[in-house]
Length: 85
Image (cartoon, rainbow, N blue to C red):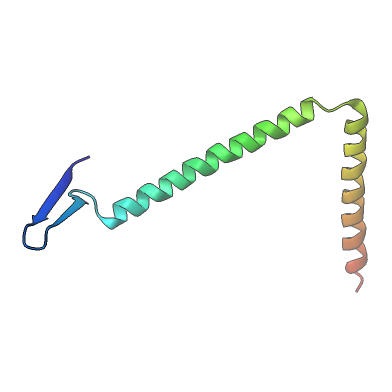
């Protein structure tokens, strides 16, 4: 990274700024960084969920199935009854 230094001797101010980059380049770098961090976070979340699923006991697995089944039936019945109103 190249740095341009403009020295103002009268005011004794040294200004460090990027020579080749514009503000849009900096914004683009921030957006790329955010995208990469979102992908890494999503992969970490996915890894935790798969590990959680693989480490479940039979009791927890059966309980999870019944909870999901209950949610699916509840949503279906709610939509079914709402279609008549």
